[in-house]
Length: 453
Image (spheres, rainbow, N blue to C red):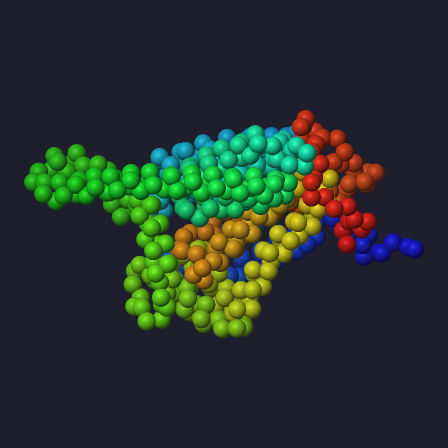
């Protein structure tokens, strides 16, 4: 019987360019990003001009697309690639996180960014999401033992997640929770037993609670100190005292994050219907985002006809999903959700056909990072999670986020292309490990006759 021509064509594309499904999802997200970021940019248009916001978005998307094309052509087995993506990226990320913790720019009450060049900023929290995937992939691949992750591997993973979580927790609570979700999914693919996963998650919960208690106490002391300084400033009668006041007491002052978290969680837990509540500066994000979603109805064809984008703060970033629902309706929101879930599902299909655990962890880790971040963003928009900043991957505006997500897509395509070439006489891959100790077999592999059907 002659082979299926469609299957041959599909395999040929996969061997040359990487998985076509991942390419399709990536291109669709690019189209949505260009359309919806322009629709949600009315506030920026008023201050920057009609073309500047879309020009910036297209520029970052173009740079990201170049990164994807270049990365998908790189064999992930190459030592230079692995050293750059694992220890190299980790060193840069930790340095940037520490720098931002003490000297970073304050955005929305928290130190989140650092200036690289005039007008160009970097948010290390986005880098950390990418770095945690590569580090955990390496740790779990090195610590495979009898199709399980060794105790030393779990301890190493716990230390890494705790370190990154501690450095990121001041930049946003959801970033830390996202790291925990990513590590949990990678533990499953790595073959860890449920008992070990439970123990590790319990450890994360205890460490998180312990850290929040300490930080809450420190924030209270810091607030008391600032209040006393303000009283001194108001009662001072000479200019010399004013000159001795601590700096940073302006509108851009860093907010005590533990108090902000408690307030947001309490408002979320105790919130009734927003219908009868007046719109205030404190709840305008929730109110206008719900109004935007209500305008969309079940289905709507209203691209560029958003009514709330001019009133909704951060409509182009933290609340762009609400604008998507307003312009495309409930059906449009479900379509975007299915795109991200399809990415995770496709990654799972690739994982079960990989012979080694390292590429499996890289693929599922990148897909989990993108999908969980999208789910967090949507949950915040619809009120399932408390208010917190989290961009919608590849759609929200933000140069760092777009570039990081693009790199994640490039890595997935690189691994999928390498796996598709397995058994190809012209491109022998996954047969000889490049770095010693990374040859552990994939415990979730399910061999099939037609690998790409």
